[in-house]
Length: 407
Image (cartoon, rainbow, N blue to C red; front, side):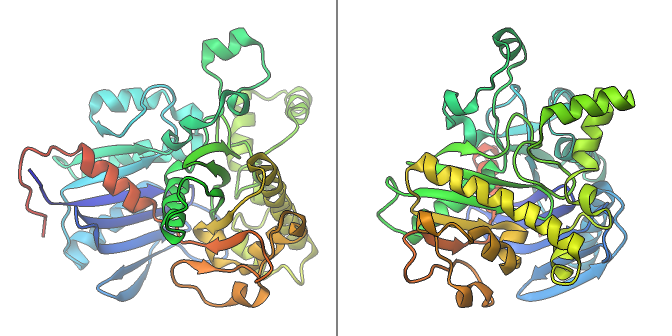
């Protein structure tokens, strides 16, 4: 039997909390918004920006952490806009080997999720705390966890394996897990829609460049074949507070010279490195871009960032044996034309040529930014992880009862 429900989708970034109430199965969006600059040091105040019935609104409120952000969001939903919801669905980054599909969260599941905190300290810690906050703030409302790693289960062994002693790898299941899978899958499906009829043959590089975390994904035959993140989200690109790729020898030297623990190094790599570590004044790439032309330090940080993006685009182009589509998405990939411009510079040898005029035009929805001579289609597609999460949650919600959506 078909049923209806309003799904409150919660998608925590390392410094943001996106929320939407989506009516299912129609996929009608009743309200959407994002709490931005949550718990981080920036030059701008934290705020909740949201859209309802075609109107854009903003509330500036202090949000020292994601629990505070959720409390402010629920106040907004219940008391300001008066919109109800039937269940809550979370994007959960790293389930380890415990879960391989969407699950309903209960006390037993929470205990298992506690064992995953070390796998993605930034996101898993935030998500688990938020799940516990939701249980307190919204008792009786079912919660679901949709995992960010499932899309990358198709990465082949030769790409997912690490050159470490086999006994350790087998004992602890060390393997490239990959992340941002919900977003990369959405980008793949939207690209398929844009190029109707070419689904099975398209080779896609998806660039998820967020204000917090970022990763690239190589997609072939509708499957992920590589992701720039690894066993943890620390591998790959330079991010707001994560280091990305680094020579392990540096870490060994730091531990030896400073007599610090593995836990302290982990904290440094996740929370004190990346853009914040190098620039020191802000962890937000948008602050860097504002000072790009006049600040030598900001310029160096920016070039460090885009150099790594270019490196992975080049690598994945070789891996795919020529790319059909290059897609930029998420906050930085959509909002910062300078990142797209610099990321594509020097890639003409791969047939990647960006149209400079199209690149700086205001965008709404999917935009083709390719130069007429480009062999590779270059697109900007806003991601919609929340729709993917709502779809997965709807599949798992009990379907033996007719639900009237909350008002």
